[in-house]
Image (cartoon, rainbow, N blue to C red):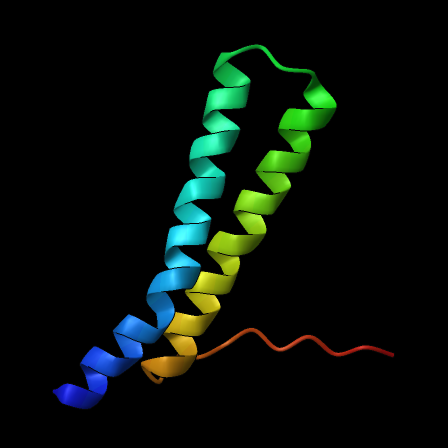
Length: 70
């Protein structure tokens, strides 16, 4: 159980970054900021959320995405 706690705690900073990015995106969108700014924030939030998901899958033994480059 202690190992699980350490894994969860290790991912918390990334999770906080993702939540903060998502919050900034929604605030910018609600404030009517320019679309290029909100799109940048959306992409940032989306990529951080994907990183959180990948981390959790890797740490907890689930399948992870594999990208092959030619």
